[in-house]
Structures are given as structure tokens and as C-alpha cells.
Length: 435
Ligand code: GUN
Ligand code: ZN
Image 1: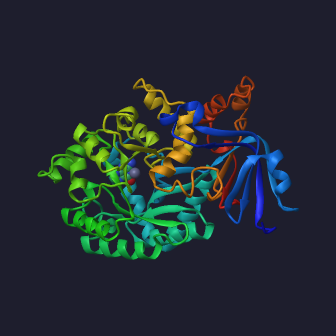
Image 2: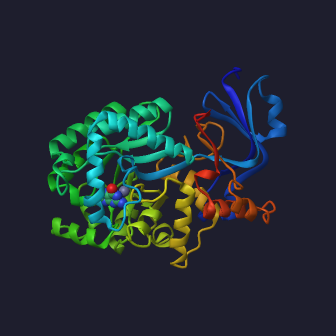
């Protein structure tokens, strides 16, 4: 190992090795009380007991020591809106009115590359401050916003998935593209940015309300031409939305059926929300191996409804489930706060969600649903060194609560998830660099 490129993080290392639904909670993770994560040129080269590995480090290799904190893979947020950093926390409306009253006003500003560049800096700062190292991102309808986002992500070396929102109706003129311009702009951005370094493109028709049939056909053409590229849209979030969608596509039998008709379902397709699905829609998502993104703070804030995780994840027609913030319908950038609201939504439905399952989903689980499990989401040799360091004693109330915890890792994680936020993030590493 060349000195200068090797560094290490020492502390309480926790990573997930299997889905707790498959192997049980006790067997789903690896925990090292005094562990070492060795990083070589941005990738993890070794993980093990500090006592064993420290002697093998090259002389002079820096070791960041976190004796009390937890060292985990960076969080992954599978649905978030980059132009909504000034929409978050807007009072009093449900989805359709919220879009018109706040969101479609704010997103118009992202036509300006200077505004978009400043927004991208703030947005990525905020994600990293919260320990989120990868996100699946909606930009605005303007190619300028996508350029600004990817340029900033590339500069920081973050692994990000992002795309231009396609929308050609039911929105202000300044946000509308056309079937042809939406296709052309998406195609050019995709060709420039997809798989360039750590960047990935995602084809992003906003939702069925804002895309005509002609635009859906163009989205389908893009997917056909680039079958390995991600797709994202919104699905069955709000009952008024669903009723409106049915009037716009009267010949198709369900909301999911519209996306299916236009060839948008598939293993790389991420459907935000999925709160109100008919059984046939669950079957279509399952059969196509599509992903349902659970957005708990958003579903509560916009009064959308309760996501039924057990029905989707463990039902007779299982659907891959990820978790996401959905800022700015969502009310926090923090995946910890997101997990707390998810827990409460599941409580209201008599479903339990152990902390180990939550932390699995926020890291390895989300990585696997995105097909990125060989790159991110775990701490093991070969993975990219995207890492978060969490301090469960960061606030007086948490320090006090932790005084009654004696070595039970699941209890510590549960306290982090129920009481934690950005204050608990002691450090974030992107490809081995502390940011
Ligand atoms: N449906 C269509 N666009 C949006 C959006 O920006 N946020 C949410 N939560 N739902 C949507
Ligand atoms: Zn959304």
C-alpha cells in the first residue's frame, strides 16, 4: 500500500451483511467494538479489529480515532428534490395545492444557472451535514439546474443520481417543456452525465398529471434507448391526485397501469410514495421488480396517508422498498428523523420496525434497491469509503438517555433514530475524504 493514499478510521464499526427479513436481526450485521476501517485511495481495503489491523498500516498513515462514536456506511436518500430547499416547511396545503402555491413558484428560479449553482452548494452541504452521501434527486425542468447539480457533485466526488424533471402540462409556462424538448434535453444530459465518474442520470417524468401522453411516449423512448438508466416519478401519493390522474388517462385502469403502459416500470424505476395502491398495482410493481420509495415525513406533512410497508415488502407480491426524505414535501434532510417518522407511521398500523432494520434500509438496503450494493452501503473491502460517524450523546437529552444503555447496540440505534438528527453527525467521509 502506497503511503499517502492510505488512512484509517478507528472506533465502533457497524455495517450490515444481510437483510434482517431474511436472516433475522441477530445475524444481519457486523459490529466491532474497537474496529478499524482502512481506506486506500478512496476505497475500503480492510475492515477488522483495530488490534489486528493497526500494525499492518504503513508508517505515518493517518488514523481518525472515534472512541465513542459509531462508524457506519453513509446514508442513502432515494427521493429528494434539489430545487425545494426553500419550499420545505410551507404551511397548510395538501399535494396539488402545495405544488401550485409553493413548489412551482420556487422551481422557476432554477432556470438561472447562478441561482442553481448556489442552490446545489447549499443542498449538497446539507446532505453531507446529515450524513447522506448518496441521493436520488429531482432537479427542476431546466437543464441548467441539472448541470449545476452534477457539476457540484462531481467537484465533491459524491455518488449521486439526478435528472431533469419532464413536465409539459398543468404547470406554469416557465416550468413546461414539450415532448420534444423534454426528450432532447434529457437525452443530452443523460449522454453527458450518466456514469461519468460517480454520477448517474435518472429519467424523471414528474408524474402523470404533468406529462401528456405524447411526453409519456417520449419518456418511454428514452427508457427503450437507455434501458440501464434509472427512472423516477411519483405514484399514488394523495387521493385527490389519483382521482385527477384517472380523468387524464381515462382508458387506463390504474395509476400504476399508466406508467406500465408507457414502459416505465422496471428494476431501476423508483416510484415515490406508493401510499394508496390497489392490489393489481402492487402486483405490477412486484412483477416488474420496481422500487417503492417510502417518504414518511412528506406523507405526514402533506397529509397524504400511511405507507403500508408490510403489505409491500412482505406481502404475497413483494415489492422492493426504499426509504427517502422527499424534501421539500418532506420536512427534514435527516435520515434519522425520517426513520423516526417511518417508525410512527408503522406503529399506527401495528407494524414494528426495529432499529437494526431501519439502519439496514438507510444504508445497505437502499444501496441494493438501487443496484449499487457493490459500490456503496456497506463497510467492506472494495466498497467506496462513504462513511458517517454518529454520536448518540450529542444533546443533553440524548446523553442523559444513553446513561441507561450498557452496550446494547440495537438500543443505541433506536435512540439515535427516535431522537437524533444532524446534531448527531460527528463526521461524514466521501470517498475517504472527511468533508
Ligand atoms: N408529485 C409531483 N411532484 C411532487 C413533488 O415535488 N413532491 C411531492 N411530494 N409529490 C409530488
Ligand atoms: Zn417527491
